[in-house]
Length: 115
Image (cartoon, rainbow, N blue to C red; front, top):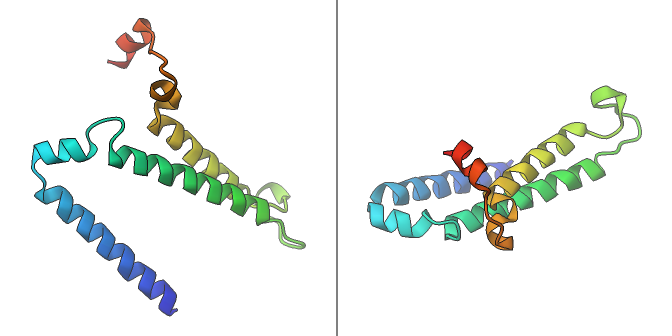
């Protein structure tokens, strides 16, 4: 019980500190901190998304039980796999599906639709 209480307190403090930081930064500082595709915020978000994805894939892998049945009468908890796939999509979107990393340009017709 103490571990749960401590994790809630630490999470709350981190959230309060991050919101306080966001509210106190000037627009130039905020732009420098998180405004570009290769900023600290973008990189940290991508790392957290792929980490979450891997954790949920692992939870799906170890969720096999001897007697319990989950979704669709299966012995694995498919909810973990679905959430893992959602985080994989979030990760892909965060890194622009590798466009910037692979130096792949968006076609003009797609840019028009995107605008």
